[in-house]
Image 1 (tube, rainbow, N blue to C red):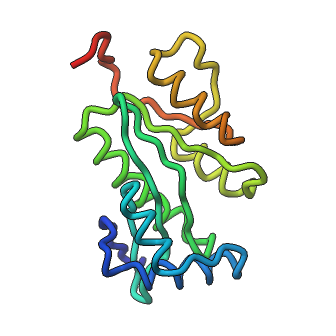
Image 2: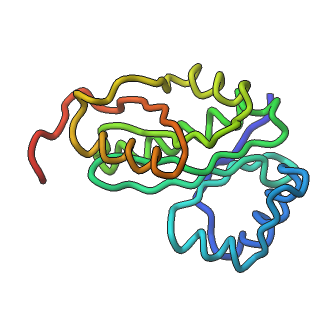
Length: 164
């Protein structure tokens, strides 16, 4: 079984990240190094690396105790169950260190059914958030405004009922 290393991306990774995205999307997404650097400035980016280099990445940010994962790419797709799971686990651990109550994946329209099924196997689900804490509802509404759906996973049982 291959070992994977998950770590936060650094500006020096921008070129390798751009090449990975082009390869993984078969050229449908073609960021240059500058666009990757802009992305690194606006959110946290995690990488998962195998022996051959980058095999996955995820973009995330936190606000109001909600972790939002809005970029997620593992290539080849056969590595989702190993490298992809390690990537999600690292993000969830970092989110828990920041006291996040929930992690939400902003699912783009037309996402591959296999990727959605993978997220569900990792404990993410759709659900009615109308009775959820207000920050959860606001995060879900943000995704909907972007034309995305939401899968979520509660990270903490003890919810914060008033601002810290």
